[in-house]
Length: 65
Image (cartoon, rainbow, N blue to C red; front, side, top):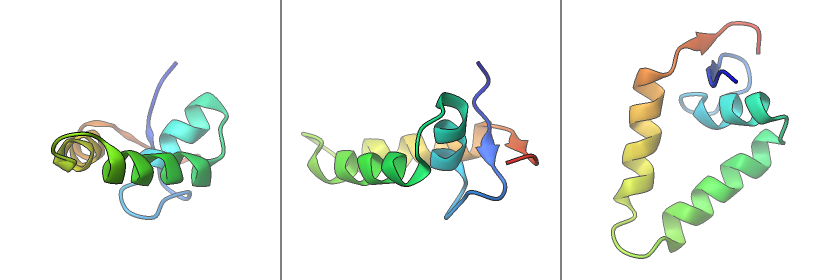
């Protein structure tokens, strides 16, 4: 299973849209879970932001979705 960033279903970098498309999930639900994890994760919540940015830089863009 390939995880790629979304070109059309994106708000910032397309990471959540790409993950949602790869697994057949709702992209808004993936975004909501990401924000909730970023707010409520114990310890530094910068980990979620750093993971999102790194994935946005590393994952290729899929022009199809």
